[in-house]
Length: 149
Image 1 (tube, helix red, strand yellow):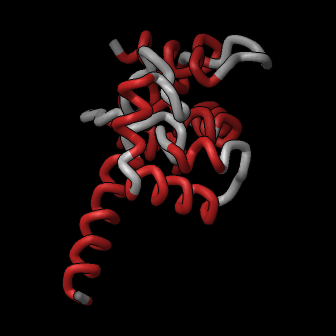
Image 2: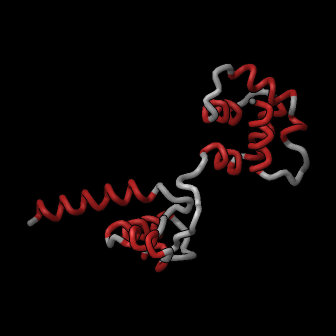
Image 3: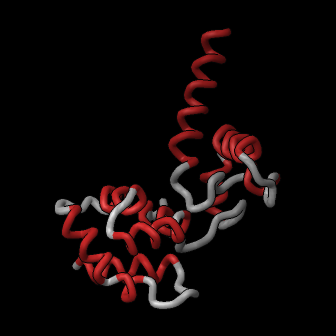
């Protein structure tokens, strides 16, 4: 009986790990997301994802359009968008200098081959990337992509 429970637990956790990262919010679709809506922190996210995965409510939520499902939302997230949003000030400082840890990481995430040229290009076009003090991270990514094309 212990082996069966261990296998069920392992499969459940695998399902939780696989399905938990497929959605734009951390906990995904399902009863756990509904029950713990508005709660913050890793503990609540883990509980929500576990409930979502263990009770098969992800499929139900997607099929019925309930339990936190949003029609037409993209699967996954663009890591560059997230990185820029989370590091706007530090990235702006590095681009202004033409070098730095945040700029190196951005080049890596964007899979840039010639990092020196990339960094120089962004440095030389700082005002085209950060067009105002109210520029959004989405606009910054669009501006960087336009310069990198």
